[in-house]
Amino acid sequence: MNMLLSSLDKMLEVLASLSDIMDAEQQQLSAGQVNSNLLQRITEDKSALLATLNYIEQMRREASEKSGLHAPYSDQPQLAQRWSLIQQSSIRLRDKNQHNALLLNHQMAHTEQMLNALRPLQSQQFYGPDGQATGQRFFSHKD
Image (cartoon, rainbow, N blue to C red; front, side, top):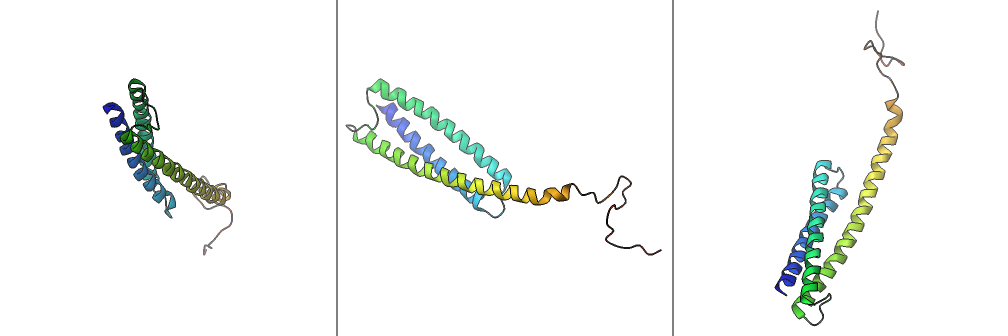
């Protein structure tokens, strides 16, 4: 049972860290100007924490099987309390993740709009191969 208790405690720690990371992600996605390098690091940290959580979940399942106890651990108050906290935390994280997905979709739509506005300018040539201005002249030369 100690291994099971330890697994649940570790899950709670990782979920708390994941909550902090998702708060940072939300802050970046809500900013007027997204720091793409920071957002990339946040995404990598989030992925690492999710992998860790998956590993601990496997350990929890193995410990549950060995001890003959299964979630929600109703007859074990210490385990039941931790399991309840894990469930509550998971629901909050799911909601944060959905909110962050909406913010990310908004950022992607905004970026796409900006790119669409710039695309027509991309095809215009302002200078020829000789380095001289082409097309419409914006200033005149005095001879």
